[in-house]
Image (cartoon, rainbow, N blue to C red; front, side, top):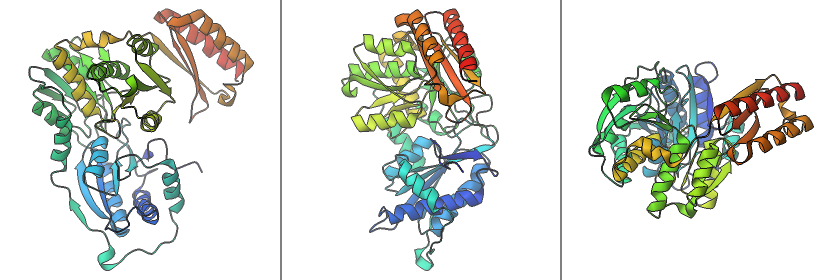
Length: 447
């Protein structure tokens, strides 16, 4: 059996992979492990629990709350809130543990459980491993006054909204914005924050019914936002995903602004304010070469990590950097959050527009996005991707052809018998030609 915890908690098809008994047992195990580690020493333990609007979140929340309370942990129910709000409130409310129920950008039938420590950071791998090992093992449950009590966390939403607004450097007065909440966790918070920041706000994807999360809306489906921005004459559009840890944007003319461009804009803003730690941005190997060239030309350093916001965050925390993220829209602003926060990111992107009094399409020109082509080659022996002499030679030839205006990345999939071939080049035709050529080599050399 593989590891239950993935890179972003436990996730799967709700009521099939992620069942109520599993959710309850995970919560009991987490409480036991943290208690044994001394996290509850000298006080009565408290946990906060939040969720996105998925229908399955209702019964999974009940299971998590039951598990925690049965293990002697008092529970504050936050209701429907973004993942980064749960991370923030875990720390802000002096809780010992935070639990978020969400499958992020996945479709409605999926769900997941993510745990945060008292500082608002995801539990480390070694603690997750201990939680998994404790599943189903014997324990002595508390009785009487030792059981946990459950109550609603009144005012928690306002506390998070106030925190977001406190980070805003300028008012958004005069800006007209469309916000797409993906029928997800930000459907109340995002419009409220933007209105109180001074913007005129139009909302789409803000009518969750438990089954429509991420369905044709949100950061993975930008067409609806593009239409709404053009039809309303808005200055910009902001899109979150289902749990609002991502943010992508759309210009007044309907052009997409991805995570790389957002990071480039925010890096420029922070550097000009003297607040970009180490004049450095942390990104993944999938960030566009155009982003790296733009940052280099601006005198900034880009540090690359493996794909995944958890790896970006690890480097940021270890080395003291305060801005990082992914092309997909996970942007981490460590001065204000402990994880990627899509509402916070959108707020600061709009603040850059307001401060500079320039449209988003102009700000996005801080970098030139090179054409990027990704080909997934399935059914091959991915274990030989790094050692095949034929593939190594083909990559070297392609890199010589592309020179300084392109690059090649060969990535074995972490979960499937598949190798990803990514090529960036000066033109889309060249990127496509090189990617297809390399994909052919992967098929023959690794079959």
